[in-house]
Amino acid sequence: MRVVLAEDLYLLREGLVRLLGDHGFDVVAAVATGPDLLRALLEHRPDVAVVDVRLPPTQTDEGLQAALAARREIPGLPVLVLSQHVQQLYARELLADGSGGIGYLLKDRVLDDAQFVDAVRRVAAGGTAMDPEVIAALLRPGPVPGPVARLTPREREVLGLMAEGRSNAAIGQRLFLSESAVGKHTANIFAKLQLAPSDDDNRRVLAVLAYLQGGSAG
Image (cartoon, rainbow, N blue to C red):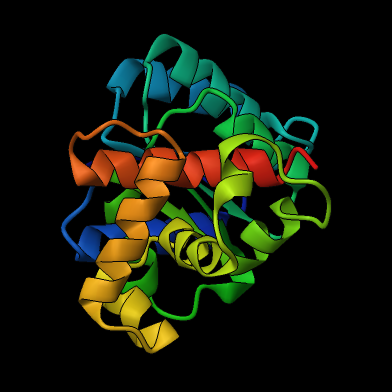
């Protein structure tokens, strides 16, 4: 699996290159600036981009903007954002085009390599990997518009865990439900969000995007 990595801190960048390499990833480019990231993404067209939000030259949002520009040229390019803080605007921009293959992790909440590598693989496969704090920031109190408002509190709870990238079995363990009960909740979620039958993994991503975008509109 081919990865383009963007991180401006040398030691962290080299550490991530080593970690990814140890887990079988091919880091085809490891860059430190926004312009270099955009060039690398367009040149290599990787399976996934792992991107810090703030990169030189201005240390604002170069990483995200480079990733968004690349996604316009390469629709559906999987992007996993690593950030020091929850940035609602950045997360909403990333979700705005409705494509899958999206992750947003907080650096200080990644506790081991297995957690990080699993997130990279999920995003590369077209799924989501959202830190719970990012989800909470997007779902500020307020009116929830559209089909998302039809979900019951339990269904919203299930969908929130979906957004973290959890399987039905893992959701069941967290909520003390059987896997079949979680399956019924997910079927109801798909129906209420008007997601026509298709590949279940794809519908999970579309449901998560509807949930996050709807919740952040309040």
